[in-house]
View 1 (tube, rainbow, N blue to C red):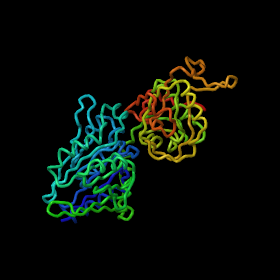
View 2: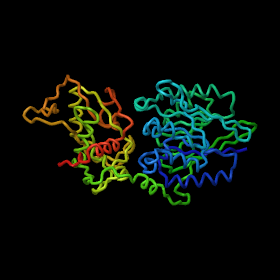
View 3: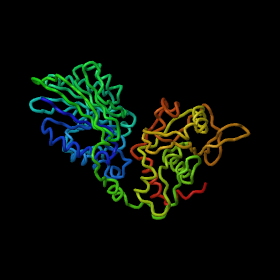
View 4: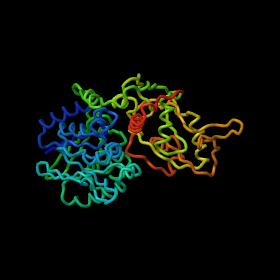
Length: 450
């Protein structure tokens, strides 16, 4: 007997591809019937798509239902780009099982999802266990806990190994943790991975464990074939199906999302320019808004945040979403004066201005230049200062300062100083939420001059 397991990961609301995947899975269900399962490994949700933004991911769950999903887990996009209340209700209408062994309520330490589920396919019991990546500070800011993913997977394996014929780990932990799981837990027959957007055309082997991964953005569907004899797996094989080769379907999700986000924010807004090599009026004002929101001494952002320009007039939620589609939150970072001056000097070098950036919550393309607010330079003293009560005050190496900036800079790629610094992630408001609230509190707030 053969059992087929189809898998997707990191779709990121790429619905034009997912519509084709849905049609394919529906066809495979007709072909293989009960000998087939379909699972998703998380990050199906991405609020850069207007329909996901408007429905807070509920549209993604509807699509997973249409695709006859059997089991799903969450990625960091479900876990930390949605408010806690939105994640708690996200899967209320799901026709599939949602599992995750390491997502717990911060106050009670109780698991939110079941850690595993057992599916029976023609008498063969398959245990699915799932875990998601440990972005601990972000989850803690939303009153979740996620630490100890490997330990929780080990616990689940120990609980089910005597009651199942096959163990499958659905891992939104990344490629290197998948290899670690295979090395530490020989009882695991199959690992289906995601998060790091890697793909294996014919799977990868760690000892007797097969690892499958299907890239990103719904570019591939993973297919696992398990040959079963007397309830035991005698052969395992993996391959990828290129979604570009599947027949096209018309994608109406973008227009639907646009309609749902048609609510006006302000009736007469100034144009928002897309400038990469200098600060526009909007970016200058945004820096000031962020200073107030983060209650900081200075702020730091980059010009590439503006993805699409806005020509002015009525600004709707949809138009603002086009301008700032990013899954990015603000953060307060505690730095010494010496560290703050190092950050200022690095920012002034504009090392990344021409870089194409993917990931880190950034949904644009070119990074652009850094823009700082409430910081100046006194030529005669060759010293930087910040404003306190509208008066310039030299930055003291030994004093402590708060920098208001964006979470995407805290992963160590841009400023090493941020990695070990004390940080407070200001969740759940994304950058566009901060802008939207600023407009609603003061419609004139972005009418600033260069």
